[in-house]
Length: 115
Image (cartoon, rainbow, N blue to C red):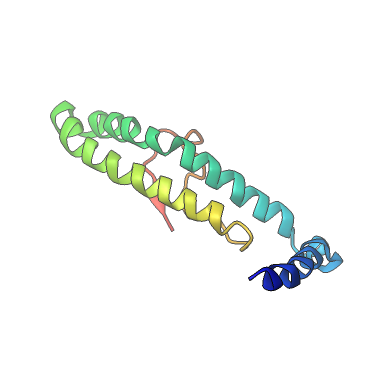
């Protein structure tokens, strides 16, 4: 196991600091944004619960907001937190964020959607 780590470490370092990666299509900025986005979504995923209660109450009334809003909020809380954790784990793969809005505070009045 140690041999594999010793052999793969220089390759990873060379890959990360190669001029092709840095001069490419913003690899470092894309992966950095994905990492920060993932951390923020893990930390603030729980805010989906009150957000969905508020939005559902505003659109459909208090009774609907307290019942359906809570269920929707729990589902969005779990989804945003899990997707954020996956973004943190896979931040070296340059992909676009899977959650819209990217951060929960960006557009608090719109319902969260997933790509």
